Image 1: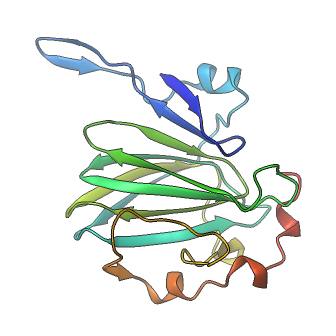
Image 2: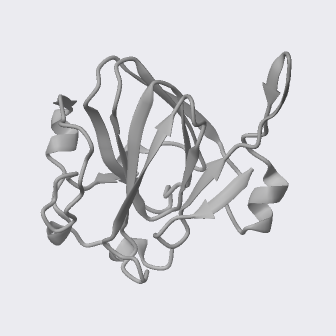
Length: 185
């Protein structure tokens, strides 16, 4: 695997290193030792699958409050999506900054989302499916979110939103939230 640090502290893109022959290829998508050597999370307790029928579907921007804050490892296994994250850790040098990456079934790229980040994606193609691992069990009482179109974040999406849930549309802006609980993550 090839780990590339993103502009936001602690976030990475991860590219597979396929080894192939006439049958196809083999590649590791996770290695506890390699993740551990970089100081990244190695304990994932849940795997989630998100299928989206249409291009322009936005999911997020979600996070989990402690003690259920989580690391995510996200990969697109069908279609294409634009995955984007925001650093919500008040003591981070990249606090309130965002970054995004295109994940496709063809590029097989993954994104490593650290604790204390808001996470979202928008589908770029119909019939897009994402598979992601999480380091904590989902806890509805710990769920939080930020509105994807918060004017203070100025997130630029590569496609118009065709669908978003009422819940995701109604998350408060950052200015309306106390994020002190994410300090030190």
